[in-house]
Length: 136
Image (cartoon, rainbow, N blue to C red; front, top):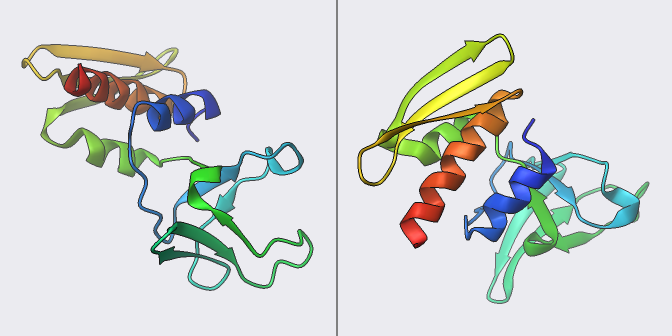
């Protein structure tokens, strides 16, 4: 699972989250910060209103939650979602003795390698580099 720090860095870089079933997230409130929630049609559903997207908790009286604004949640993108965000810039994923390396092309076509102990973090570093290049 992606680290919270990298998930925050992706969010803070401007990466937009469109909540969908299967997505995982944390609620950034101290009492729930260690819990990972998964969107599901039956339990937690994203509902979009004119004022924004709300994550609606169905039948979770044990937490006394009805809903939370999506912008109060920290999206924890999966490996496949991060790879999809890289699109055609993605080149390779390689397992190493210390973890994983993701190679992707920069916006100028230069190949760069991003390493991390966790595969999602390696992908997140590559996505973050791409987003930062695109916005500068």
